[in-house]
Amino acid sequence: MNGNTFSVQVDKFLKQTGIKLETLTKLTAIKIWTSATVRTPVDTGRARASWNLIRGEDADLTVPPESEFPAPGKHAGTGDKRGKMDTAGSVPAFTVSNNVHYIEYLEEGSSKQAPQGMLKLAIAEAIAEIESVIKATNEQT
Image (cartoon, rainbow, N blue to C red; front, side):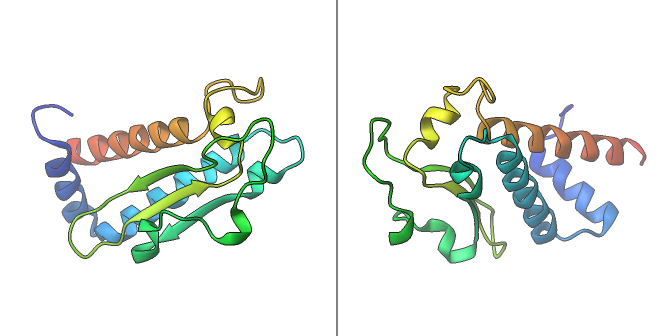
C-alpha cells in the first residue's frame, strides 16, 4: 500500500469505520476457512469436510485430535496443513487446518480440480480483498 505500512493503513481503517480489530480478524479467518473449504476438490468429500477453524488458545495446538489422525496409505504425508493468523495484543489468533493425510498433495496441486491448491489461494484472496477495501476506505478521507 502506498507510502504507509499495512498496519498503519489497517489502524486508520478501523478508526474510520468503527470496526474492532477482533471483528476484522474473525471475519477474515471465516473467509479464509470458507474459501479453502469451497476450493477443496471432492472425490469422497472427506478432505472438504475436514477443514477446521480454531480460535484463541486452541489455535496453537500442534497435535490434531485423535479422531483426525490420518490412516496410513500410499499418499501418507504429515497430514497437516495450517494457515495461522497471528494477531497482536488481546485479539485471539485463528488457525485454519485440515488433517486428512493427503491434504498436502491436494494443496500442492495433485488434483485437476484444484491445480493451484486451496489454502494459499484463500489466504491470498483474503489479503487482496482486505487491502482493496482498506485502500478504498482510506482514499475517501
